[in-house]
Amino acid sequence: MAGVEAAFAQDYVQAREGFLAAAAKRRLKTESELHPSRKGAKGEELAMDSLLLGPADAASLLIVTSGTHGVEGFCGSGCQRALLGDDELLKRIDAGRVAVLLVHAVNPYGFSHLRRANEDNVDLNRNFLDYAQPRPRNAGYGELHGLLLPSEWPPAAANTAELLASRERMGHRQFQAAVSAGQDSHPEGLFYSGRAPTWSNRTLRGIVRRHGAGRRNIGWIDIHTGLGSGGHGEKIFAGRNVAADLARVRAWYGADVMSYYDGKSASAEVKGSAALCVHDECPGADVACMGLEFGTLPFDAVLHALRGAHWLEIHPDAPPALRARIDRDIRAAFYTDSELWKGMILGQSRTAILQAVTALAGRQGE
Image 1 (cartoon, rainbow, N blue to C red):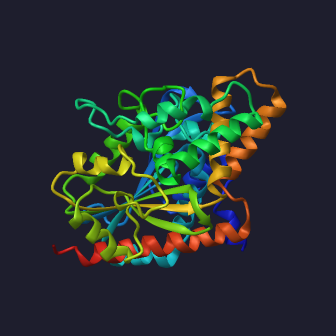
Image 2: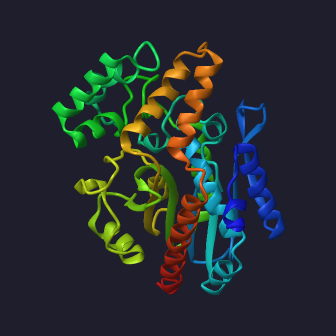
């Protein structure tokens, strides 16, 4: 289990240093896009780091991203570092003549500050929209906003009872969609989509465009945490609502790929997810996008922690003890710091990456 523990970090600084060190050990060139205006929780530099494995001129590319949702980066960073230390898997990548692009900490601010959202309270997986078009409306969120972010924290018993009553009235799926599908009506609220592309949006697009240009086949695995049974990695279709795209992803990863378009995923339907930008930046490529979502705590505990973290952003004068408690809760909601959980995560992520590499290697001549 020592190898399992070695892949994971206790904070953003450790994670970034570990990723860069693992790349240097392999003599791989990294590219670092520094955040232009923000620093980390310890005053450290923030960056979106990336590197390319395998033959640079390969017709097929696999993209593996971590930390799209900041604090979820503990898990994704560990998976990326494990890949860099996996001799056998790296040999398979080279043999298949597949290029693999690792993008570490898409949302470095959230990773460092233990927030799911970015420096502007934007949920990056709701931010990749066409802002020239009318944005998706989410009237349901407006009904719940005041309950989700009460004036005091922890919330009073009456607030908890009223929120539970709202969920009972709406039904769990409708409630989940209202809360998490994305909204642009309350900038301080949960799952805020933003009203323009963020720094992370623009930066990630540039990286994908630079490394994806001319590729015929592109796979994308975006690693997430917080939904589903503890330690289980749900494979969530993260592409367009197109039957052929879903069929391609299931052909690569199996029939147990879930789609939120038909209501069978643990996730509500997402509008503006990061992986969809590959269609804009790499037109003409055959694409297979998947979110790999690892469960941590039950839904109610995760939502409570997320509400607390957003409340804290609105109330920066909260007492230090309450701040520390909220930070502990949000970290635990998106990262289970146990050997068993980490081992489950690394095994499943390795399998998914190997499946993608195998599928892409088989498509080299297409």
